[in-house]
Length: 270
Image (cartoon, rainbow, N blue to C red; front, side, top):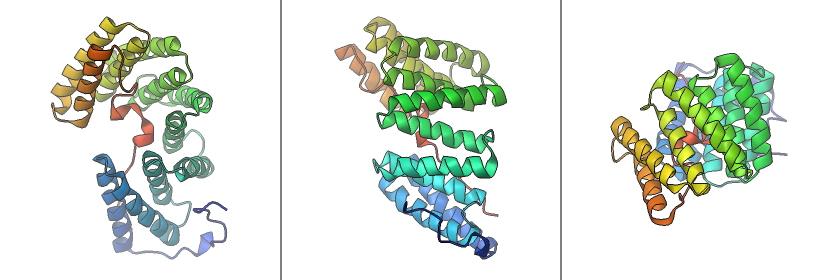
């Protein structure tokens, strides 16, 4: 039985907690989010584990807070390279479908994260299948240029690139980049991430001059939006130097906004 399984627990017996108890759970989760946001994954994991266990015991396995913290824990485990992360992420998606419904935004968030995690784990075919489905669902429910839809469209393109179809991936990224620029402008986090990933595909296809031009623009826009010392800006600078020196990027997904597997969420204290 999986280590987070709720079998054997009495779902109906979860005791009611006062506001202080929920606030404490929210605080532990928030600590995990803070550590995760600055890349201190090894410190985020135990905080999410503690908050997750507390939520299960105090709120029940199906409470929205519990499902949110489970998703955060899964994301942290994936980032830490712990194989349990993918299993927990898949289980969390199943739970959200059952509790919230397949079309609920919270369910689609979990599905998009799992698709991204599949890609990062080298399971490209599964990533393509799931990301294609999530993208279609978000287009239908949220529209093509909603920020969440843009993330899914980018994830679908990166999944195709991971599966070896870089030409198709580039086409998808270019179309999505155009839509993002029209809807949100050039100095939006998703526009910058899309431009950077399009540049990565161009470099992978041997089109170094075009890649350099896009990386330069992405770097300039990131510097203006986030600052020169922000980790995403620094990563873009490193990618640009790599293409200039070697003709290819170090990493196709050069912005942390590129992967929804890295997305964690806070919970309310009430």
